[in-house]
Structure formats: C-alpha cells, structure tokens
Length: 312
Ligand code: SER
Image (cartoon, rainbow, N blue to C red):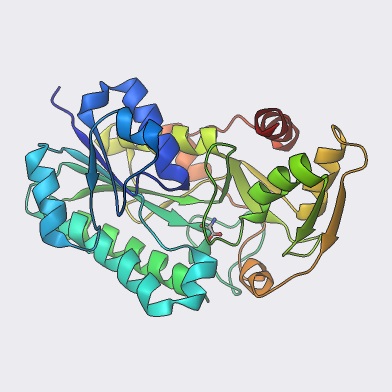
C-alpha cells in the first residue's frame, strides 16, 4: 500500500505524539512531519520534516505533491484562550488551513483527511451532561465558532465532493510529553508539572469546574483508529463526540494527594472560567463506540500515576 502521511502542526501538543506513533507504526520515511517552524532534535532526526505554513495553499500543495501524500492530519490550530485574544488570527488560521486541505482533496491530490474538532463546538445552551452527538450548538468562543463552522464544511465537502474527511471532537487532552498551548483545559497538564516541582498549584478555574478530559494515549488511539476504520463505518462526517473521563480541579488535586499527601491547591479563576462554563461537563460518545469501535482505557487515578511518575 502506498500510504504516505503528512502531519501539519507536528510540533504541537497532539502532533508531537501523533507523529511519533505514526512513525513507529509505518516506516519513518512514510510519515512527513511539518510545522510553521522546525521541531526539537527528536522530531528533526526521526524522519522527514518540512517547514510549512498551513495557511499557504501553494506551499501545502507543493509538499503534498513532492512527497506523494495520501493522508493528511491537520493538527495546526489556535486554541480557545489564545483565540479570544486574537480573534481574527484564530479564525484565519483555523479556517484557511482547513479549506486548503479540503480543496486539495476535492482536486484529488489527497485521499483522506483527519481534522480535529472540539467540545468547544458546544455552548451555554447545549445540554451540560452526557451531551448528545446531535444537539443545540451555539458556541460562544472564537475557537468554538471556528470548529463548528469547520464541521459544517467537512460534511459539505463529503456530501458534495466525496472528500473522505474524518473528525473527532476532542475533550481536554493530558500528556507528560508535550505542553498544551493556549487552551482552557491546560490546567489539567500544568497541575501535574507544578505538583512535581512545587507540590502546590494555583488554578485558573474554580474547584468545581467539571470538564470532559482524556489521556493523550487514548486520544492518539482514537485519531489513528478513526483514520484506519473502513470508509463505510464512518457514518458521521461533521465530527464524532469522544469521551473518556470527566473531572474538576479539586478531583485532580485529590487524585494527586494519593501520591503526595500534602499537595496544596488554591483557586484564582480568570477569563478562562467563562469559557469553561460554556462547555459540557460530560459527553455521550455512543456513536463513535458503535460506528468505528472507539474505546478508552485510562481513568483519572491511573493517569495521575503515569503523569507524576514520568514528570519526576
Ligand atoms: N483543549 C481545548 C482548549 O482548551 C479544547 O479543545 O481550547
């Protein structure tokens, strides 16, 4: 099979681990990493790398043709908190990069696209718990608006042009390997770093802010899983709800105290509290489980153990 993969945004929180996993799974030379700037030594030495602006159609097309790319994972995006500060930059990056790969696929230059959506597509009027796959969606953030719009375009390109685009609504993602950048769920990574370093943490969300979350290994499994599923098993072409666990900052602190008895947490909520308040607390992902066999593995206490052990 002549599968050749391009990852756009390979140096980001998800892209880093996705690239490493795909390079392990396929031959490293079949997985081309790209980002707006060069990655660290590991990234640069492990396989081919292209410096690439996801918003530059011609540049993306050149890389696709040069490497005979079949599958694109578009992981470049501006996340929720940063996009509130730079609305037009967030909108332009999140939308133009998507149109570039959708149009390359429409022209037959790519076979398959993975594009990440987010729980941010939901808003204050959405049912808060066990949020259904199909429900009210009135996102109140720039990031959420861009992701919801992107979902509509993905479905449109599938229906109109037969573009094989597949998508997941990621919850907050937690990893010890790469830091997140500019999201509302970032506290759930930072808290472990600060626990290991200082045994205390000041949280920018309130104690009882429950949000859907997932350990990175599960997210990578879902990402590659949906891309490798048979085409006719993908029945939803906007984006699949995806769920693993839900917790709030106080519950993470309690989980950390199983290993560090005197870990201290205090709360100083900032503008990100309003973003978090607009998002669901838990997600119903029955469709993903039924259609293409999604199953999560890691729960909060196990994740805490993995995070603390690896950050120490
Ligand atoms: N983790 C993301 C954020 O906080 C949600 O998709 O922006």
